[in-house]
Length: 246
Length: 250
Image 1 (cartoon, rainbow over the protein chains, first blue to last red):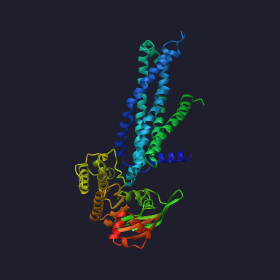
Image 2 (cartoon, chains in turn brown, blue):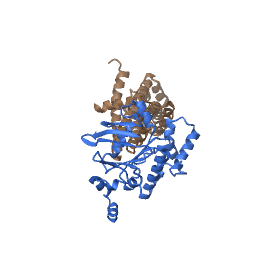
Image 3 (cartoon, helix red, strand yellow):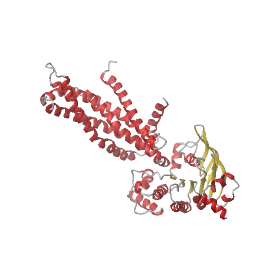
Image 4 (tube, rainbow over the protein chains, first blue to last red):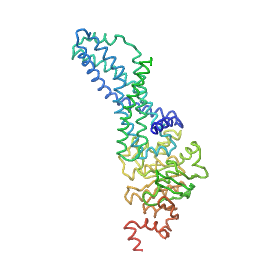
């Protein structure tokens, strides 16, 4: 409980005694490149394979004369937009970005770089952490959209060339009972995940003490805690947004 | 002048500082000396507010720092330059960006003026043609010099140096000591240096505070340190073979 309280105080401290606006703009743009742009390749690779595998697996699961092949496109779309693009990518994002944030802040802490900022009267949580959180919230939803698009498209390629589903059937499945709300759901989720991953990882890195071992431990804890938070948030968000009757 | 009274700090149940009082005077190099683990670094970190002391009171030139609102502590902190043990240079920035950083954050100076000031400070610490180098490309002594340049770039009134010669050979250490001393006199800065390096103590101890197990054990200057009637201080000074041999020669 003490840790959770300290985490919320850490979040609050970012919004008091802030630096000048232009400082954040420059920092946030730099972080958008480091966090978002540099994650595109990994997200693309994972998405392409997830989409292709989902397409093949759904085809084999539905290998019944009564099941229409358009269900392959339908299944890939639902699975990708509702779960894989926002949530599975969040786990990947936590592994790549979360560990990097914790490692970077941890190294800054043990090499006294954070102290050097504090000596200048800078609010270090605000200066160092807020741009990372903002950059994550800006770029992660875009990564999720890219991921969903690539997964659906690679599903189409796999459907056509591996399991011989006609592209027209696949596209018909994609369009079947399409509800734009599921895209909103993915974007809402991705914003929450981005906030959780960046803030938890920053918290883990910011308060380390010790040496290189502590930095490694902080990175590991950042990823572990982020993954647990993502899964919990996934459950809560799904209940709230897709099952509003409760 | 910096005045501090009754500074105390404990980590868990271990008391690191126990009611230390004193003052650091303007235009002088004030040394805080003592063996490792006696609370020297903790004392200056408590004074500048990097560590919250359990008890104690700090005043910077008549301005209360300990009980001041954040706006005032920030104002005072922006008059402080600090040289850290490892240099604490920002490893994602090159030398020029490192030295310019306080100006970027704290001032509205035009870029050309900032660059002029950075070049002046780098020249003042004896560095040239290193503007675009990354900290990892510099030697330990050069990193310390860049750290000094960053500490003075904003015309700091107070300079704190945490073991500035640690990890350096004797000759380079002496050059760093000399540089700190020159800057102190030239700009009339209130300089505080934490050290256990006897070379530093002998060469620049205008005023010395000796700590022993978190308490002030002796206070004086480098000229009377060898005659001090404190056994622990004598043990500290003559702990090395070299100093022991020098003592026998005398």
